[in-house]
Length: 217
Image (cartoon, rainbow, N blue to C red):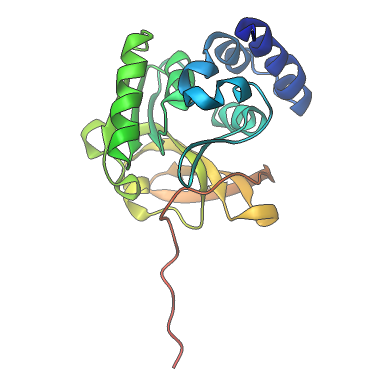
């Protein structure tokens, strides 16, 4: 039988600390949140393996190492209101709830959203709310947000999300697919967006978020 507490500690020590994640708050969140509670029953044995875990057809829970690097890049504080895009099973929302003041997590799949909301409530992550809806539209109800965290790679960030970002806030995510993907932080200052790329991050994509195709005649 797997000792999940031991496995969780090993994940932090061997997968996360070794990728230059040093932010104490991020490390403590990964030590605290039981990842095994947020994966399908048949995948519990893989909960702390350094790999993506399929949570439903075409959707995956991000492996721990790039997720930790993205959370460190976001530099979330207890005063921040956070919008998560692509909530999945609620694992990232649980981590965010320990880092932020409040979390709204948007998930397009109704089944995932319902299960995530119930799991977060059962485990006591009371400052995290899951909303079932269009991920590209975000959630206006809690806007504006200090941080928008995109839990999956995308081709393009919709303007609707930037419209929900507080002035002085930042959006963190991965733009591009495969080896060309880059972890970015996009800061909004006086209505102007500035983007900086920070590291390569090949992670699973979220559905949608495609650039509009240009027709050439």
